[in-house]
Image (cartoon, rainbow, N blue to C red; front, side, top):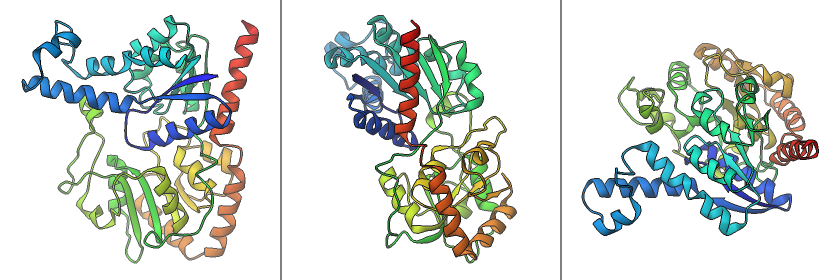
Length: 373
């Protein structure tokens, strides 16, 4: 089948989800064409900036801009970047479209695909936090797959044919055990976004005598300063924080998943800390990825699904409790033999949670829907 994959709109862990789905689709024999939404959003944003500064050609503006000013705000930039998806689908001869995340993909793009007779599967990656923002896109999607099991009911009445819970996963090619890498060996490693609650948790924990490394999006700023992402600023929300006490621990900025794997293999303990607001039950992709590499993990206890998938092979600390986090880390650093045993148990537990397994589940649903039609 010819599948158009609408890529993620950010250079973050969502891009890793995009890569995992793309490789699974290719391994299953599908002809995959990537629609690079992130590049298009950057292009149209830059055009808007140049136009506002009077640096674009008026005749060019007239040929591609609406009379009322197409690029007046972020929503219209999203529309301009998303609506051209139909051209890519026609050139490719796409028989199905799979949208990864969809947070910055305008619903018009999916509506155009549907009008052309191309089914649309939206793989939601930011549930439950962005569920309300996804309503319009869900309404023009054939199937909505959400990463949060509590969000299925939300999408069930919106998607054209079905909504299902499709957990996050690991890439069977990339997330494999391997030797540690010089320069990356450390006691504790965490990669992710510096949401304010994470910044407070890590800053208040006692890391004395522990080689702790941070990677991901950790904005620099004054002690206690909170810096929003572009999307959250647009929504009037502030969630990204930075504490100056964390600066000594920031080893890398944004890193791709290939490098993240090398950190997993080189760290004695890999931390996973979910956003802690009580809405989510499901575990994030980092837990699956790290387990598949054979890494030993310590994870917060806020997600009931952790035990459903991994049993007691992954120790936990009390969510939001910096003292218990530090105690748990020291406890397991002193027990290397037990760490190895638990890491191996977690690796066995995660075997059937790859993107190939998720694709097989989605494919089975599509077949059932077609046979019932």
